[in-house]
Structures are given as structure tokens and as C-alpha cells.
Amino acid sequence: MLARFGVGTAPGGLAYSPEQAVYRAREIGGSQWVVKAQIHSGARGKAGGVKVCSSFDEVSETADDLLGRKLVTQQTGPRGKTVSRLFVEAAVPIRNEYYLALVLDRLSERVMVVASAEGGMEIEELSVQKPESLIRKAVEPAVGMQSFEAREIAFKLGLDYSLISQAATTILGCYRAFRDLDATMVELNPLVVTEDGRLLALDAKMSFDENSLFRHRDVSELRDKTQEDELEMKAADRGLNYVGLDGEIGCIINGAGLAMATMDMIKHAGGEPANFMDIGGGASPDRVAKAFRLVLSDPKVKAMLVNIFAGINRCDWVAQGIVQAVSKMEMKIPLVVRLSGTNVEQGRKIIAESGLPVITAESLAASADKAVQAWRRHTAS
Image (cartoon, rainbow, N blue to C red; front, side, top):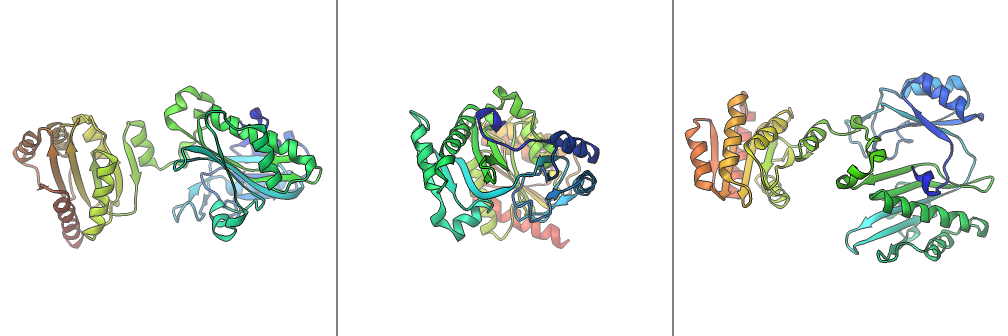
């Protein structure tokens, strides 16, 4: 993808089996290849996910060892990520390594170029251990990145004069890819200078604005759902905003601000939220029921808190969704509901007349306290 924009890359290709990995190595040619696990995480090399191979048999054995294996890195957490595809790439002799990234800087409302002559290290390590090595350059959105700015970054990296033109082409190519593909991040780490004087991106990470994917089918087709959290993926496919956490109290809330406040109040009351679930402003009963099923499908959830402050939304819709969801499933955990705002009286009446074992609350603090108390009682029993 980056090669289309003039960024130098080593020849390589995807492989889904040991046989395909060997085919890729034969296709590339040469005498050494790098087999890389394709997971959504950095620090793969430290976890054994990047191997240099010197024969076709070694490529096959490495591919067989990596495919289906769970790699645990500092970014994946203890659960790790399963390797379902590999990238086989020509090994190149490296003289120097550099770091280059373009990211959205929300503070300055600009695209920010971040570069360093200390390539190969994670950016988190760089910012802590060698903050003085980081070069930052904000791009003026009215004109975009200019050639002289790219050359200025190249000079600051301490590159040899003979590489300045290549470096400027690479930096401008990354900027065009960032702009034209609606990316939110383009990271090359490492960007290397080879022994024969070429500037190549040996590893790249890109993230994209999900709202723009409808116009980038080539990007959408690269999505690997095996690397995503199953519940988060199901929620996204249903138009819900869900983020899994490590606690025991499931949350269904409308509005990101209220969700954050609710999670803070749960923590303040001595509990731990199990998720961030924002059902949005116009939630129908069916949408609420879908949210219920998603949150309850997490085995960690031992209590449920529904906290709705209805504006565009309506409390009676939410109440109907709660009744619909709880009536169709065997609710084995305590449920706390707090409704406030539009049609609140109708909503509370629907809950009260349902005959369901629902604990009600009238304030944010009270709902969090009751959810934590209910969770403790349920866990103790």
C-alpha cells in the first residue's frame, strides 16, 4: 500500500500456511528471508514473532511454529493474539535504523510528523529513554507537507547527503498515504538504510478513520477480524460502541460522557466496570436488547448497571428494551436501572409493572452504589 505512494519496501507477500510461506520465499528469491507474525501488536520480535530464515525448510518450520500460536507481548496483555497469517519478506543487510511516523495531534489540530534516528525501539520506550532524539514537525493543513519540510526532517535525522532525496520522497509518500487513505497513523519502524544505500520501510503500521472506510475498499478488505476483540467486533457490526474492560459490573449507558462518569462512580464505590457500552442517542427497544445480549455474553459480568439520561433518547423505549431483553433470557445476575430525562415516568412505570427483579435508582451515585452492593452480594452467595 505504501509502495504505491513511493515508499521503498522490501519484496514480500502474505502466507496462510507453511507451504504458501515457502512459495513466497521461492518467489522472492535470494538466500535469506524474514517471517513475520501478522498480529495487531508491537514488540513481536521480543515475543518470537519475527524470525530470520536461511533455507526453505527453515521458512516452513518457522511458519508451522507461528501459525495458530498465541503471541503474548507487552501490548497484547496476558491473553495474547493468535497468529493466523504471516508476511514473508526478503532479508536485507541493514546499516542504520530510523523511526518515522505521522499521527493526528489533537492538541494542535494538525498532522504531526515524529521522527528519530533511534529506530527499532518502540515509541513509548523512545519517549521515556531518549526524548531528546524525537524530531517533531506539524504540517500546515492549508498547504500540506512541502518538499523543503521533508528535506529538513531528513537533515535532522543525520542522513548522508546522498540519501536526502530518497528520504524526502519517503516522508512525502507517507504524508500522501496518510491524506489520501484517510489514515489516523502511519508508522515506519524501522525505516532502514541498507548496506547498498537504499532507504526501505522494513515494518509499517497504519490505522484508519473507520467512518471513511466506505470509500477505501482496498483498505477494508485487509481487515483481519481474528485480531479484534470478539464482543467489540459484534458491537461495531451492530452500530454500538463497546470497549471490553477487566471488571465485573457490566454497563449500558447513552453518551460517552455519561459512560465515563458512570465508570468513575463505579470505581469510587469500590467496584470495577466490565465494559464501556454506549447505545447512543436514539436507541430503540431492539437496540437496547442487542446491547443487553452483548454485555451479558461476557462471562466476567457479575452485575449489570443500566444508566440512561434521556434527551433525544426516550426512557420508555429503553425500559421496553430492558423488559424485552430480560424476559427472553434467564437473568442470573442482579440488574440495577437508573432512568432520567425524557418520558422518565413512563419508563419507570414499564419497569415497575414488568414484575422483573430490577433494582431501581434515581441518581448516578446511588445507581453505582447499588450496582457494587448487588455485585458483592451476588459474588458472596
